[in-house]
Amino acid sequence: MRVGVIGGGQLARMMIPAAIELGVELRVLAEAEGMSAALAADRVGDYTDVETVLAFGRDVDVVTFDHEHVPQHVLRALVDAGVPVHPGPDALRFAQDKLLMRERLSELGLPVPDWARVETVAELDDFIADHGGEAVVKTPRGGYDGKGVRVVRSGAEAAEWFAVGDGGGGALLVEELVDFRRELAQLVARRPSGEIVAWPVVETVQVGGVCSEVIAPAPRSPGRLADVAADVAITIAEGLGVTGVLAVELFETTDDRVLVNELAMRPHNSGHWTMDGSTTSQFEQHLRAVLDLPLGGTGCHERWSVMVNVLGGPVSDALTDRYPEALVGHPTVKLHNYGKAPRPGRKVGHVTATGDDLDEVAYEARAAAAVFQD
Ligand code: ADP
Image: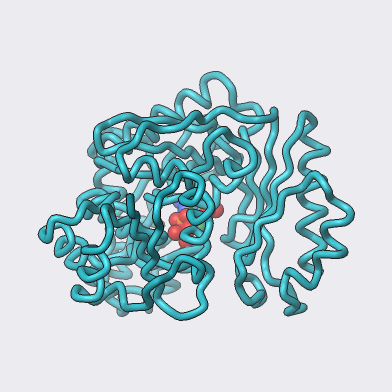
């Protein structure tokens, strides 16, 4: 069995050990030399080029992704050539375009923030006026880690984004500024033949638009909240025909509603804890799902798992230079190093601690991550 992954970042890298354990051959089409997944990258090429992607697809049993940026016409060329693609283009377009996603989730009757498609500064001003004088504006395509998301109090503050015309014809997504208590994420996996499994809902903590920490399961979530989150994600996976891992980012509002923020149709930062905290890691599950194999259990080894991202700090030492200091004090913490140059603010690794006492587990994970970031 041979799985081809388009994109050579850390998500593809973390599929490598899972593929080895399953005895699955992994091929990676990386966008540049020396990327995080270089160990499995047998090809470097442009994922927007049909010929490059078709040649890659012909050598594997299924094509999947570590990002959502492969253009629709390239995905369709693969499908037309008879290459299984998971998630397929019909599902993936909803993760590529936030306006399409909002439209479809509203059609499915799922809870989303109040939103509108706006094409002019005047339309944006109207929405802001109707929503208490502020709103969140988003570019429909290409945003990540909070880039392409802006809180505004007047349409003029997003004027230059209308001009960009980023493939969305200059239209922007505008949403109510949600008064949320915290952010959650629900991870599920679905096979092409329909089987679907859910991990426990988790709490995610964002700093400056970037995920910094994940607590699994989300504190105070068992019961109604866990059921609602799982139901929402399962409805989305089935309604959109998602195959592979689906991450649904959620807001828990101060008046106890759960609203869908974002979708990712691939392993996701909110699921990294599963590598050390769950029976089946999201990377193994993604491979099983895209190969249409029976899915693995989603239970937790211990009561709590806390994952903390390691970002490049002001000092540009390789993470390995810090090992003697970082590893000695934290023998129970698991480190995952993405092998990337630690530029400031860049996600270069993560650590996970597990155990019975949430305060201790969180302290351990934060302390270990901090040693890499001074
Ligand atoms: P990205 O695609 O860059 O991750 P998101 O749409 O997930 O962008 O938004 C990034 C962050 O901005 C969210 O995690 C959340 O903290 C904040 N945010 C996004 N939409 C809203 C909203 N409607 N109300 C309040 N905060 C929001």
